[in-house]
Length: 497
Image 1 (cartoon, one colour):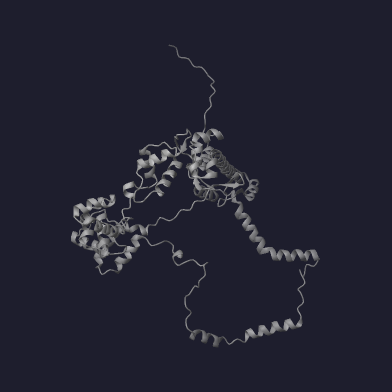
Image 2 (cartoon, rainbow, N blue to C red):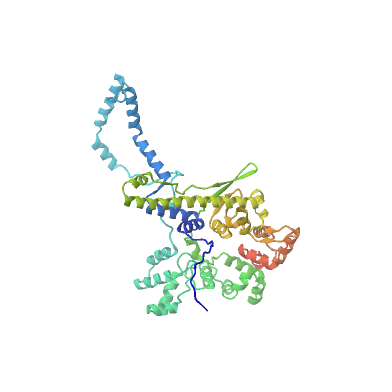
């Protein structure tokens, strides 16, 4: 077979991921806070970018500072008098005499007598008044006290020796957020530190007397026992129920407990009421999970019978190009290349942010078109919706719609929701029209909230009630939705007393 060389010309199309396209895709999937942080970092690196709001604020401050002098000079120029800008109004002789008398009186104050009386007077109380505008003392703290700080403070006030306090700090450092000391065990801690297990156990028992009650327990049973003893309910019945029948207490199987302990059912009820008041996670009251407030990316306002989609630009920098660096392009070749490079980068960033806003608005308007009944009537009218429906409606790819709807929030007449919330799988109904899974969850929650607490609905009963309402759903689906919403089973929701 002969070898030969020849030239061929082929035409093909392919998508090239340019840096500008990569930047646009990255901006599209950023949340609002991440976008603000990225823009601030870009403003620090690129001198071409300016915040239009900050520039306007600085100019207004300059006008405020120079406003009075400028006005006086302007009036003087208009009057044709440059030496005295404005004639001062003449004050009558009587008024001038009063002013001079007041000025002389100020100089005749007996400051030594005043200071002596001020020093001998009683101290002023440190009282802030009843002003509602002043924040409370707790609001001025940089951070709330953690569980570790609270326990370490009590450990320093205890009567333990210095060595025992060092061991106590190690134990406190290994207590988890729920208040349990699970890892390492007492034996492992003693072996690692070269101590006796009796000494570590002694320090742990001391820590278990600290506040909050039940702290430092190694199991749920030990936590309940510590609280039982602290409450003065260390009778045989409560202790036996905690040690041997925690499973039956969880299932509320009081008949089995009464049969095993050979006690009347009424006494079992009374002991169970006492145990139910105990906290199974004593450390959660010192949890440092602060509330995270959501700023919506877009608003949906209802005016009359029409809805309007409005972007939320509050909190985001109003970017503009600096005129100062534009003028610097004519100073030299080196500065011109540098400024041109930064200018192109700034222009691409501004265009990418504008394109991001337009895409979010376009996706939100499409969601509004598909879920119009939800915005009018509520969650029970939510319809099944997938990313492909929105992508085909606005002429974009599903991946783009997925990036737009991730970590983006919308403020609606029904509340604040993530854009992902409006995409749900469909549940078939007997009338032929599908219903969104979120609407089915809402219906299940309504049935559970309206049930008899002494005879709660089982999953099969909920299936039957939903079928009467035209919703055909399996029992295992009800159980799955119930667990997703954090609703307990019927046996655990039942209230015996």
